[in-house]
Amino acid sequence: MKKSNLLLIMIFVGLTLLMSACVPGPRVVDAPGLALDETDVFIAYSSFVYSLDGSNGAVNWVYPDKASTQIVFYAPPLVTEDAVYIGDLAREFHKLDKATGAEIWSFSDAEGFYLGQAAIYDGMIFAPNNDGVLYAINAEGALAWKFETGHYLWAQPQIADDTIYIGSMDNFVYALSLDGEEIWSTELAGAVTGAPLLSEDGSLLFAGSLDGKMVALDTATGDFVWTYDADQSVWGTSIIADGKLIFADSVGNIYAVTTENGEALWQTMVSGEVVGGVSSMDDGFVVATKEGQLQTFDFDGGTKWQASVNGEFYQAPVANSDFLVAGMINGDELVIGFNLTGVQLWSTTPEK
Image (tube, rainbow, N blue to C red; front, side):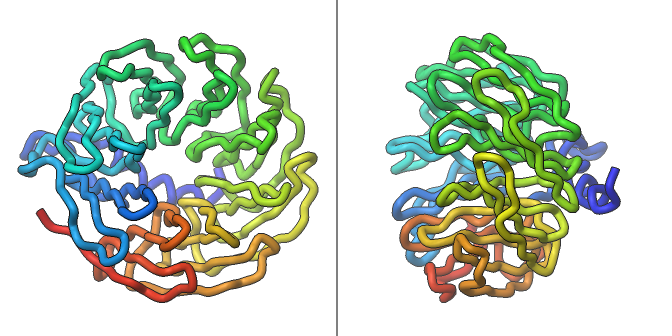
């Protein structure tokens, strides 16, 4: 295993150690899970899920009403037109009313906890769990089916053309039918912690692994189309822009390769460790480092703006057409909002 993986894995080891000897329930320190819609920010952190006004960071609502030693949230919420879907570390998965935060239903059939973001397709929710199982939950909150892999599921499934794609810490990428039957599975050289990414035409699936490889798989067969060797492990999310696949490795290298054949186009670097990966903006992308650096680029790798904060980033920032939000730990605040030119709009640690 590459040396840089050791520190990063230590960050996540605590996520599997849920029980405290003194007080029952999960005891985890982790980065906040973030999601956006057009106007608001949704944060999963510690005992609560928050909705914030994206323009100023003010709290719209908080779920639940009271903190519980049994419930902890860190997974990025899934936000739809009228609902927020979020799993916790007490084996519960919740559907909340987007406007008020009121719980609509909860699902409790999982054996493990939720760290990955869920996905929705044709009214069905697909929730990855740390027990290695992908749970398909229907609109009423009941189990439709489940699919078991060999290790943790930490990333959001990707769905297109009635096929579900999911990467696992067992080193495999899986393609499933909408009724949970395996279509194919392909073993990579390392564990897959970030969400796979579909090409624009749906013919290729891109997946990075802790072995430091980015691969393109044929979505029809699971066969390897090409492989690109990064310098270090690939943990987080990737993006596609103008026929380029853009991704980062754990030591801060950023790569752009052609989606068609993996040919290198350009490479640049940020100063620090990158775990969360790369996030899209309207005219470029953003990368955040463990050392508290935010840096934005255009799609040709040119630097746009950067910011430094007192804190550590372990998740990718999220952006919409008006603002960008990043969540941190060990900093002055929990969440910070910027406009798309790099001006800080607000920072906050929301309270109940």
